Image (cartoon, rainbow, N blue to C red):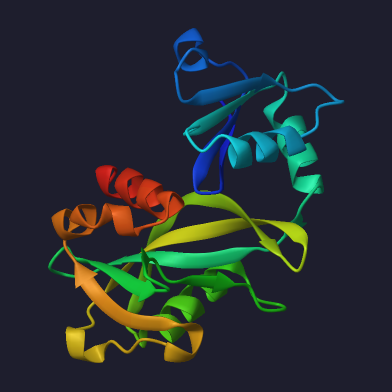
Length: 210
């Protein structure tokens, strides 16, 4: 399988890959660049900021890892972990925060493993304790600005099972979470426009593989 990374910038996917099909290069709402050692990734940020109709960016590179590490070097990295939780009725655990439908996740604390952080964050944000990790899911990447710096956040995800009932859930209101709810796949997809694209991408890819 071809190695590649997908990073969401301004809620739009930026693909790092060794080859980009001609059909993608010619898409009306896409932008493609070829990476070299003197490439400036600021061009990607500027293009996305100035051209809102662009829906995806493709970065073609001989070495995906070299290009991605160069991209990472221009950011502060903040590592997070979280969970896609499913219950016995086949429903998935979502949170509502700042007007968005999201999945529970958060930053690693000092000395914590990724697994420990994922379980703790789901427990804290949803008030849930009966969690069992099933498997690791793909890592998602997105960027944002914080205190004048560009931040790249890799979020490590795990599929989890829980036997918790609705009355066992409690939103962590001090983190801006206003609701915790179980949604079926159809209910979640019906609200896909309320999700960040990185979250809807993770959810749709994950449930297809279950």
